[in-house]
Image 1 (cartoon, rainbow, N blue to C red):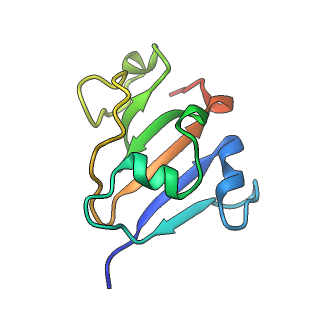
Image 2: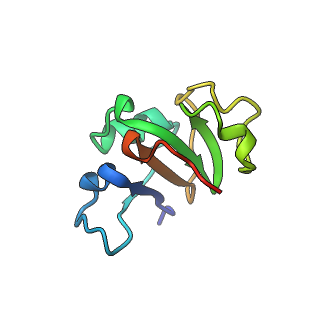
Length: 108
């Protein structure tokens, strides 16, 4: 059996979790289709990219709309985290952290 990917949802994006509650993790587990990208899994989860402010991939900041993010000391998944590129293929076992605009302020 393929290892599913995990999509951890934060803030108002928790509403896309199967059983959204503020007092527990809100995680979608999806079996990855061959060649599926971040954009594809967001679409499959019915999450519009316009709702997303930050994307973390395997614990590293992948993309953000926050201009201060590079100076906050987060490990970065790519050199330019302001490049909003979601056509990046995922691998089984990957973990995404998806934050909405209500969680736009990243703090250390």
